Length: 213
Image (cartoon, rainbow, N blue to C red; front, side, top):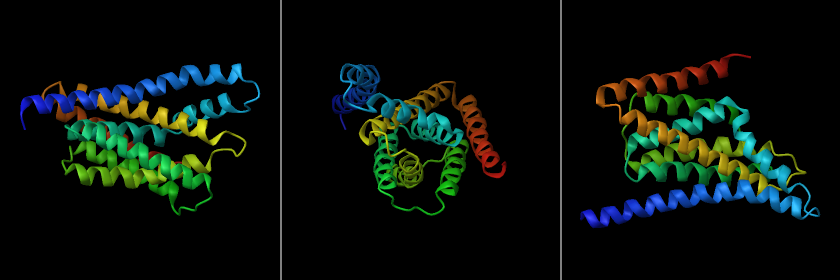
């Protein structure tokens, strides 16, 4: 692959990432404004605000989404955007299924296991093909998305609520990717040690959440 083609692809990925974050930022600014300007639209602001804050209401969700970003940063290349994008996409689909009343057994255990496994993947600097990584995070995203969907009160706007938690998820993934890149820039030895400590801390926190009342 020539440097020019690689540069174009990198630029395209950067532009896409900026577009996603820009769309979320615009939604945060304009959705509440639109709601207040149209009082007949009931629950619009409440739906988006609740969806936005919901991923931050559980430490297991926060840790998993940051771990996805850390894992993606370690993978590098196209995995930096493809792994988080897979998680967000499956999360949204599973959320719709949860809203529709589709049952998913052992959802809470699946969420806890996702944090443990992803934390270990970060700690051990797991290197797998990008396709395998996307399947891994996509599988765990099913549990997180289903939990978000089933916990949404019926009175809220499903569209704006979904937009809120998708944007919050993107922010958490971006935080993880940024942290992972920063860790990688500390040098091979230091970076590996920091990754091990961070990943282990995420896994141990998940275990504590699983066994403590």
